[in-house]
Image (cartoon, rainbow, N blue to C red; front, side):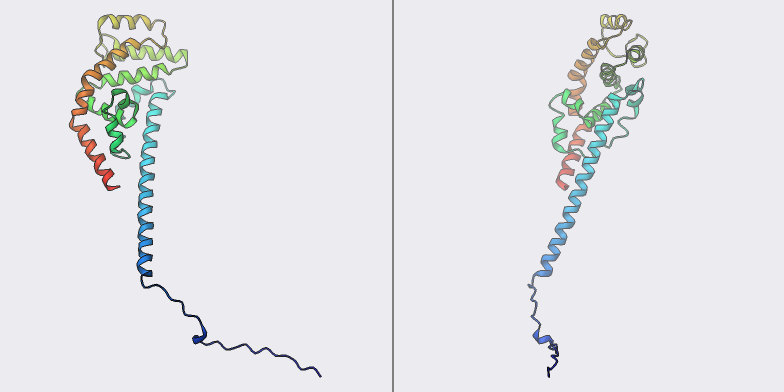
Length: 227
């Protein structure tokens, strides 16, 4: 007669369980990991904020020069400096780059806004505004818009009674007046070069020595040291 086999589970007491030993400094290490994670998150958030600010500035500059509205530059410029916090996302290296040349300064949306704010404080923002509308004008593809923009720029900046008349010689003024009768993309090229040269030799050196620029450098330096 076969005997049935019965399985009797072995009673395991606590003494039979292997003891798990944690290193004495485990809690300290865990705190260090948590602190590192928190610090890393803060750095990541700062980088995201800076990248977002730079993206917004780039988009602003793109809208300014490439908008397809009739006179985007003229309509948009008055609020340009107010809408930018020049210290956001600006590194010390970027701010220092502006001192290389006026071309470098104007190629940076933040630099452009800072320079225009400075010119506005000197009541000479018509120079940078004229330079900008000329940049916009040269990018215009529609012949109809080219004509309307040429007329508007001439009325706004060139004509003898223009509300924002730029400082160009009479001969250049007359040449522009004749050229816009059959407008091309080069109508304002001579006048734009004169105004750029004027800013480069006069306003730009003063900007680099101004409190506005030096304070911006100091803010950027402080932001970098806290990053």
